[in-house]
Picture 1 (tube, rainbow, N blue to C red):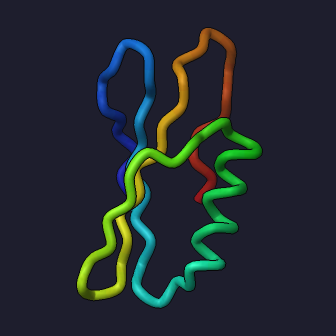
Picture 2: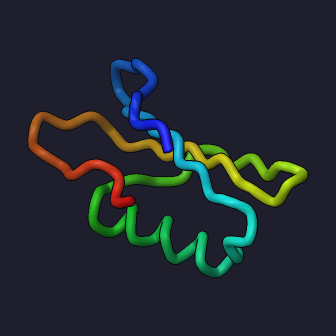
Length: 71
């Protein structure tokens, strides 16, 4: 998983790679944890032919501290 973000004045973006074999339910659970505890929301999902997924998460930039992605 890459941890570098895309620069945007209002939003912070982070890519998350889900390997092939991760079920839809497991992916949804993992993304729910990111949303609940770190303030991320789903921006984009790409499903590749090998079964892996690349997910872009986003959250509004804030002055107070929010944790990063949980890996």
